Amino acid sequence: MKKLFVALSCLIILAAAAACQNADPRAKDGPVLQNERLLVGATYYTWYPSNFRQGYLRAFLDPPQEPLLGQYRSDDVKAVEEQIAWCSRHGVDFLAVSWWPKRPQQNVVVDQAFVQAANLQDIKFCIFYETWSVGWRKEYSATVFDKQASDFFIADVLAIADKYFDNPAYLRVNGRPVLFLYLTRTFAGDYARALATLRQKLLARGHDVYLVADEIYWSVMSADQDRQPQPYLAPEPQPERIALFDAVTTYNPYLSVRHDHGGYGAKSTFVADVAGLFRRYYDLCGPKVNFVPNILPGYNDRGCRRSLQQFIIPRQWDQGAAEGSFLAENFDRLAMPFLDPRLNMLLITSFNEWNEDTALEPTKPAPATSRDLSPSGREYTDGFSYAGYGFALLETLRDKACAAHGRVLDNQGRPVWRATVAAAQGGKTVASDQTDRQGYYTLSRLNMPPGVYEVSCGQAAPSRVTVDGQRAAKLDLRLP
Image (cartoon, rainbow, N blue to C red; front, side, top):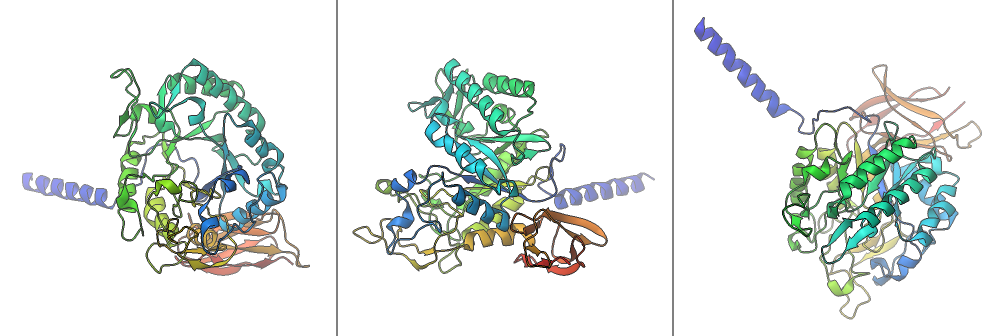
């Protein structure tokens, strides 16, 4: 009997070990807030055309390249409507709109143009709050929350809430309005009290805000402010600060001193190192804090910071690889392995940050060139090739995030708005979407792994579609 007990015990231990080995490393305790689709967002900027004049890589290529809309104005409602339509068709579910606390002339564009877009409700939006400008102290490289900064921050966010949180297009997670806070990793001073007071005042207005913190980085401001009289950097994540938020992310893990992160992703240590960084933070997120992975299509800020000659991350994964292949590899290696199954949200830097060349926004088509307009012909490109990629970046993203996409038309060939398109397998609906103003829809890959599905819409006969792991299947539907 004793031998039998020992044998059974060993079997149980081995089974438990095998279960641990096969367990999903993304598994987390805590409530599931959103599991209907991959919730894909991108940061969005309203500072054009002024920031075009600060310089951007594409303008210095030989020959120069431009955004598809040219050097547009952010206060042009038609331009905003075009950008929203592109997002809707390619699986970008929300735009995190940059808000600068002390730039009222820039923020007014959100009111005058962005929220005036006729198709705003085809996607969602939220505010990406540039918190560092509330109380930045250059001597410490810290955002210091003294009484003045705290009072300003609280009043400013309350004003934002009054303006936007009740907008039907404002992004909500489980009914809670989402607010991204930039550079929380630099917070020092009495920020904990400021955040608690903000939450309390927002609750009094009926808003249980969902705060996403830009907290993930190689070194961050220490949360232990009793050890030294001045703010100082720490090499480790700060659990005390992380616990103040609902989710953590990073705006951009680029670090200019890490030259081993430069060049083609296939040959650099960038992705492996960022994966290690993500793992440290992911494992620290308890049942009350979600994780939002961030990816980028490349990086080159020499158009606006040429004198610094910072290293470049090209948009190709390797020499000769496809335009957008760095984004595709980031999606597979950084987004999906660290997608929090309680939230299923990921953020992309960026939709339209042209100064650092991280934009998904389409360019005018142009042949690839590695030459630029500098005396050496390579001070901006460092010899890497740049093409006018058109919609290649957005199409790459759609292939990764969406199982199927298409358009719904009526029997006269007109687009059908707000029609429900649903995919079913084995008699069970696994994904659905509503068509936008032009009749376009996307079906997320989250619950549609490769296989065969029945796609239906209204009175139209169901259509069979085969989903693979490479390209989003295209299926247009005609209603009777």
